[in-house]
Every structure is written in structure tokens, then in C-alpha cells.
Image (tube, rainbow over all chains, first blue to last red):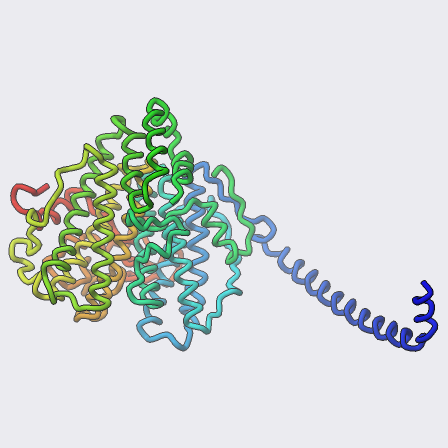
Length: 239
Length: 284
């Protein structure tokens, strides 16, 4: 206590100056934080007006409608990604790559619209996507993201097929998943030729190397992996 | 591979798995006992024996028929690639091409072993290389001496495999075996995609990794008339009664609509194709 008093007594001017500086810094910090809060509030208000943010999307796996909506959600995600790539491809892409990304874009749009049409009034709304982790001007970043989407899509369809109760939907799901697998193989070969079916790199998605089996994941695991790309809250019930 | 998580998955999708397993609790215990000792490499075989034990006599005949049908096609693919790699020196260029064909051959072997294991005593008589005629009665007489012909036949086989599995899916509906079949199916699709790129790099300029519209809108986009049956109906744009071309006002063209969905082949169609490559006495 004596030392403290002594210090206070010996350098009153220094502490005054220090306090003044702190106050000024603190004020600036508060001001900055206040501005940030204002921005967040503004952003929050803006997002609150978007219907998909307000209500989210519910996937009810009690029947085929839920499974089809699950596929619809994933196709929305893929289509949104490829539309962005095809519209503004990285400058490093070759003409062939640009053309094939155009193709893939339309395949995913076709898949998305197919589910939308089949589901009719049972369809979930449009999802808000978040591609902030992807650098769309960088070819490697785009290819890596495309590989993630395609391999995950294959895993999703392979894992969900057994839930379908209607023959026609099961066949259509099979008709789509093989196209996704063709995409996955092509994208992988763009990254590293020969990696088209590198099952050892897919074990975290449920692939089995010794059985020669591709990826397969249950919907909860697929949605967890896809969540970083989807802003809309997705509720899963009856899984 | 986590066998318990696999059982967990089966439990989710096959409500009857307990009924299948309970009367055979001893068999399940035996399986788990073995499971502790066997290596990862032996897992598919063990998995096959698990399914065999779980489903046992109750395995529907229709499911076994599908698995044996798939096994025949996997034998065909395996022997086709294996012969090229071990008995046709110089056919496949060294480096990336040989590596790719080796990868594919190894997958087909894994599929053969997996299906044999799953079928157990119900598995069909094994097929040897000598039971096949990969020239298809002379149609592809240079299949083991001309690399491009080899790639053409390989592409046709993979595209057939993709379509064959799809066509059988409804028989396996709701069955845990369906997931395994789908996992094989998409590997075949990956093979097809790569082989098409290999063929495109060897003269078939513009051949896409996915099956597109053929010249003038025909179903076969490879331009190889001898494989027309492999691509039957691939030019369709109608899916489950929904027209895909221009769907919901989008710019989806006829070609994109055809490409975006692979079609299935009926069992009869696949049998016709497979029989072209099976010698008399071994035809389906």
C-alpha cells in the first residue's frame, strides 16, 4: 500500500496522461464496437426480411417427400455454385474446362428443377447459400470446391437411396447419382489425372477401399458437411 | 471401417434387421468374434458373410438373382481388364493409362470378391477368362492388339455396368444391399467418365465424360455402331413423366437434358449385351 501511494504520489502527471490516453482509446474502441453493432443490427434486419431466413427449411424424412426435398436442397446448392463458376470462370480455365463447367451447370439446374417440379407445393423454399470460403477467381479453389460438392453429392444419393419407397423415384435417383459420379471423376482428373476413383481419399465419406465401394453417407452427416455453404437453417426430423 | 457404425446404419434402414439377426444370435456372436481378428483388407468378405448370416435362408431369391447378375458383369469386366494388363504387353501405354486401367481392374476384382462373399453358397459358378470372347465373335477382333479398340470396348462395358445396376435397383428397394449396390454403381460411373476421357484423348474428339446426344440426336454418342444397344434410350429427355428440356422456363437444352440423367437398361437388354461376350455354354 505504501508503494502504491508512493507511486501515485511520485508520478501523478504520468498517470493522468496515461488515463487520458486510455480514455481516448477506450472511447474509440467503444465507438468502433458501436458502429459494428449498428452494422450487425442492420444486417440482421435485412436478413430477417428474407423468408428463407425467417422460417428455415424442414426436411421430414418420414416419407419420400422428405428425401426428394433433401435432394432438392443439395441440387440447389450445386446449381448455385456452378452458375457462379460458369458465369464467371477463373481465367486459368481452358476452353474445354469452361465448356464442361457450362454443361455441369445445366445438369445441376436440370436436377434442381426436376425436383422442384415433382415436389410441387411440397417443395422447400429457395436456400440462401454462403460461398465466402471459395475464391471464384482461383481455378484451384473452384476445382477443390467442385470436387467437394460432387463427392458429397455421390455420398448423399448413395446413402439416401435405401430410404426411397417409390420405384420411380429410386430409379431417377440412380439416374442422377451416376451423372454426379461422372462429374466427380472428371473434376478429380482436372485436379490430378488418375484420381477419378481414388476411394482411399473418400473413406471419410463412407467409401470402402477393399470392397471397391464409393462414398455413402446418411443425410445428417451430409448436411453437417454442407452446412458451411448454406445460410438457411435446415431442420431435420424423422431421420 | 467401423463395423458397428455399419450395423447402426443398417438398423436405421432395415427395420427387420433385428428379426433377421435374433434367431441367429450365435452366428452374430461368431461374426463379432472373427471381426476382432481379421484385417481391414478382409472386411468386405467378412461383411458379405455377415449379410449372409443375417439374411441367411431368408435372403429373397430375387435379391440373390440380382447379386448373381451383378457378379456375372463384374467377372466380365475384371477378366477383360486383367487380361489386357497381364497378357497383352504393350497394348496399354505405360504411365497414366496403365495406372488407370490397373485402378479399374482392382475395383472390379474387389466387386467380384464382395459379391461372392455376400452370396456365399448361393454365388454362381465362377467365370474364367477362357469363358469369354472379348472380340464379340470378331466384331472387335483387335480388342487386345489395338489400344483404341480396347478403350471403345472398355467404355461400352462401363456405361453398360452403370445402366445395369440402375435397372435392378427397385428389386433391392429398402434393402441394405441396395446401398452396397449403389456404391458399386457410382464407382462404375467414375470409371466410365475416365474411360470416355481416355477415348476422347485417342481420337474420339469431343466425347464427353457424361453420355450426351449422338450425332443428329441419336442415343449413342460414341459413334461406334456396334455398341448401339449399350446406349438405347440415352437420348430421352423425359424423366418420371417430367420433360427436362426447357424445364420451368430454364435454358436446359435437349443435349443437357439427355446428359443430366443416365438411363437404365432392363435385365433382358443387359443379358443381350453380355451374351455377345460370353462363349457358348456360359451365356446368360
